[in-house]
Image (tube, rainbow, N blue to C red; front, side, top):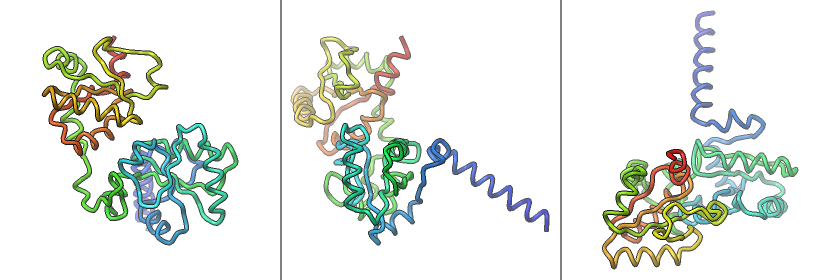
Length: 262
């Protein structure tokens, strides 16, 4: 009997360690309550919680959970907007989410809410991608029902368009491609790494992105794109595929990786 109990205890410890590794936010923010995927979906359908997408509006407009409210953590009015939303739903918990298991935006947002005495907060930390795979009919891609989870872009396809910094620089010289810096104004801070060659088109300026897509198609050259850390381009790729851009490449790791090589 003791052996059975010991084995059971070891199994629980192993499962707990696995969960901590898979969901690092749970370990780093132990005071924040979290909710699992199925429970989140059930309570969302029962209207017992309100889903809050704390990512940027660009990410939200690309892919989001049906009925979710977008209040970006990076917004200057984040706390004010959260207080307003809580006031509108006093009998419900606000369930914050971001991209996936290793994305900590939702936990950071929950921690910030606690600091400003916004209670009844819970984190759905499996993220939008796991939800989209499990419930594609309750997920929106570019404002339309996803329906088929195979429409999600996998990491393999992202990696197939990501190239090293030397390869990126070689592409600039060999192809005369259009170099795009898609970082936002705060990230950019006057820093340019491909002086006189790059164009600036942050993700909140789709008009500029469309302009350079059109130019690249007309000239028959690739788009050579970099961001801050290789994460923003993941969302841009959805738009590039939707626009059927024939040739594009991302600088792996973004400008952060570039400066590591200096």
